[in-house]
Image: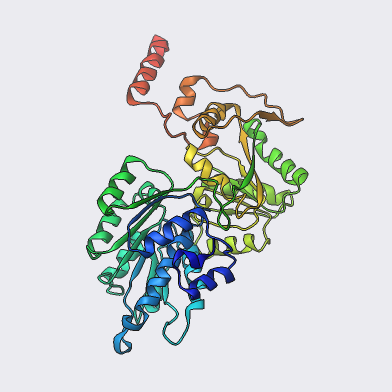
Length: 439
């Protein structure tokens, strides 16, 4: 099915082809016609499903349609499309797609759209300067968007199309209040597109309040960015003692011949610590986490994509919204806190029809949590043992597991933390066992 058959203009169909979009993915095939006819859309879409182009192409077609009337008398541009995203990296990636596609629209009747990408963590002044003369499309994180509105650098009264990308992540990161403030600034009559990988109650409530008779689209998590085929991801689980994970990681990098690998850990400290150990072992490794400046984060990703780093050790900051072409391997050095995060992590490999491998290092302390992830994802993987790395540690007792103290390599497991009653019972039991002279 060619892109032109979805109702896109010939210029946009050519732009998609020139950027390597050979055929629409399932979400593009369903969403683009719905958006073009003006419907609200509620889509279940993982990163890597092609969702960015699913809203970027219709947004650019809107720009084509408005091009003659958008700037009467050469006045300031007015924002017609607003894309709200949870992270700086995703903002930059969405902006790159929009700009790349938009470059192909220049003609006698259509101007190249001005795409403004704004996010926090960097100085606001250059972003305010870039918004002089307005913008056609704005991609923003909620906090910085509100800052720019308060500085009178941006007006949202003309927005016709609102896109909430990774809405579940927006709510996970505590943006609910900011979102409500943004929504209050938008026209009531608008088209809204809602993309979310998961649908907890908070997401359902937000979608119900925003959307009018939406078209519902559900895409399997294995859909890939540039084709409709299922990604081939070999998933492995390897048992290992907590203190020997770095040595095993080094062995895997060497034995498997991975030219690049993304290693997920639970904390910023662990990212720094593991990256330093790998570097000392003559593996070109670097950390990636939220404490790095935006410039440093952008540089790490650019250099990793250019294969100047062999290993990037990252927190879940890199689990969503980052597309690294032909990444051969992902390693869960620490297990993710939830089964949903597991899917997002391993989805960094096996993209665009390429094969990939996802390895999870399972310690005795995290084995129960691993089996929970397996159950929730419908997996049944054999727990491998590598010669010389057979685990000898003893799994903690259930109360310790529940408390998350001894199972520290998973960063705290969602859904298995002790209740207040559990903590009170544990304290009472400890007091009862204490000798009288120690009380």
